Amino acid sequence: MVIFGVLLVVAAGVGFYFMRRTRDQLHAMIGAETLPVDELERLRQISDELGARGGFRKQCEVVGAAYPRPEGLLVSEFSKTECVWHRHVVKRRFEERRYDSNGRPNRTRKTETVAEHTSWAGYALRDDRGVLIGVDPNGTAPDKPEQVVSRFEPYQRQQGPTVFGFQLPNIFDDSSTIGYEYEEWVIRPGQRLYVLGEVHDRIGPLVIGKPEQDGHFVISTRTEDQLRKSARTQHRLLAVGIPLAALAGIALIVLGAIG
Image 1 (cartoon, helix red, strand yellow):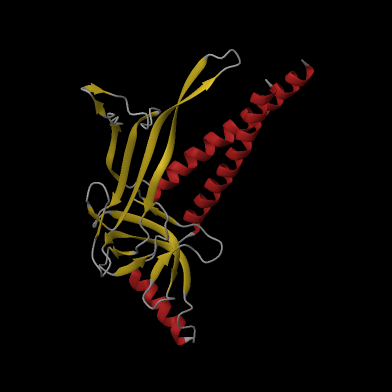
Image 2 (cartoon, rainbow, N blue to C red; image 1 turned 90 degrees about the horizontal axis):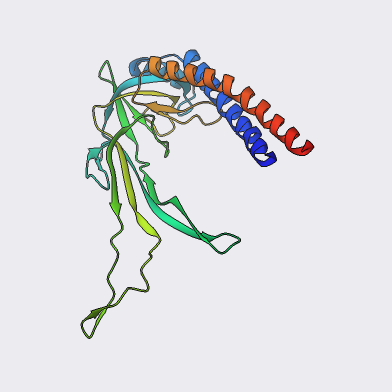
């Protein structure tokens, strides 16, 4: 009872962290301007005229369609989809055998990540006026990308050697593995994107990416209105659930200590 109570209190603390993060991101979206790229170019030109060439910084939102970098499109690992960004994850499902105090075996199914990769290559965004701005994903996974692969492949057990016509078991085979789960996500060229971040000209052309200091960085296939609605819903649910979990956890800890 005490352990379960402690877990509830810890869960409430983790939930509080995510509630504050969700609130801060919502406030960042509300406070940021959605600017066309040519307006950002005008502001950068003013910055240059004031002697701050290469030092332009502006936190804002940019909306447009994904556009490939000058080097061309990327190709995803599993589905071979042409894209501007991709990510894949491989998970192993397996059985873990343990013995209880009476020596009886217990099998528990578990999952572990054995491989994952997120593309870091930059790409561009073409806004509604047809002007391009660079996007530096910096390894950040976008919100709600398109999933192009989701499959499970059972583990194929290898046969052992044949001796005098008899098939022997493979003693080196990993009998605990059940199979492998493959997932892959992409952003195709032309995908509508919402980006909240910091626009800079450190490398010359304007690029939007993760703020150098404080600030939020969001790349999403959803609109700003959809993101705001989702954030408000999540914040309300956490605001209700966190106090309940904390109170229940404290109650269980007290009852466990008394008992």
